[in-house]
Picture 1 (spheres, rainbow, N blue to C red):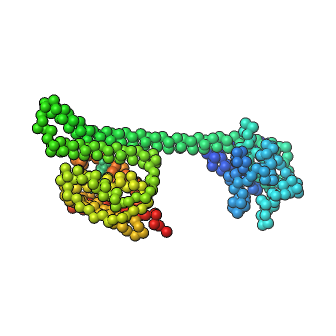
Picture 2: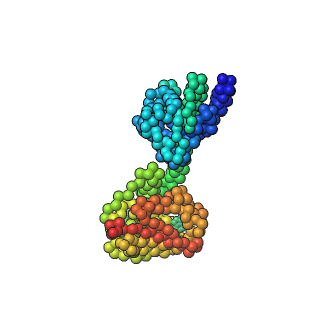
Length: 423
Ligand SMILES: Nc1ncnc2c1ncn2[C@@H]1O[C@H](COP(=O)(O)OP(=O)(O)OP(=O)(O)O)[C@@H](O)[C@H]1O
Ligand SMILES: [Mg+2]
């Protein structure tokens, strides 16, 4: 009696100290089953939604048997299943009674394993809910006296309480982890938004300031009735310059839309028959005023009739961003654009300038979001152009890389696969 009370006291104290489910299971298999003097035992949880018993830990069974029963449907005719269904413990003292009530239980002690002569199964009932249970068995017939039953039920009750506490603790820990993850995501999204807005507003202001200065100057000249200012040649220069700023604004806004879509994974590419040769020529034509104003000499070699299934708007964005960079970083030296067919109807576009060039250590980094090269920090920019290009190409199974030498210029090479011609 005293010995049982001591055991209950010791096990309860240890169970109280256990925090995680793994710790509770360890105490059950190492201390509880030993206190029951059982030869084998197992602890399971019960998932009432899935109607399944999940075996969590066992002792005394070879792994090949344990592996056979990771999850057991509650309807299976095993002792623990029945105890969980009826929410009551079952004690069986003879092999004969076990086999007549649970013929299928024989699969737990196949030939070669010591047969079960007696067993006990106790469901873990907490606030009228069954959350799991233990089963334990003996190689020798066991008499479950009232005192022994009492002892087993008292210890099992402590196990059930500890099991539930640990389960809740693990669930809470998982929720806390998930919350921390969500918080981190929200923080990153906020940081992205702040960073993006501050760079974007700065960038938008430059062409806007230039446009508004030009408009103010015109108003002033009109008020002064300065007809010399409004000669056709002067008007052409002013209009060209305004158009450049408007084009720049359009590109910036396009980039911003793209990047916010990329950030929320909403950028989708729709492929339609695209006349790539034509698209590259038209895009180049769109830059002619800018090339003229900035004094760029541009040559091109565009193979005729290249077409395929791509998203034309997005590909135009790729060409535009590369040309914008060539203009921005080309130091007024000649620019050369080439478009060629490659294997299986694919295409290679290269945009080559003879400007600043890009140090080797920057050549990967510049394709990342907000990353800018270190050589030309005096030039304005969001650090998004190449990131958008790379992401658009990824969505269309295309690639981009740069070949560059500082002081000699850069060559950006885009390769597009053509899915309409793939086997
Ligand atoms: N043709 C080029 N020659 C030299 N450096 C270049 C060239 N193209 C890109 N870079 C470098 O790569 C960096 C990233 O280019 P990216 O186009 O992504 O951003 P950006 O031009 O700075 O800004 P924006 O978002 O307005 O395009 C640039 O800041 C520049 O340092
Ligand atoms: Mg750029």
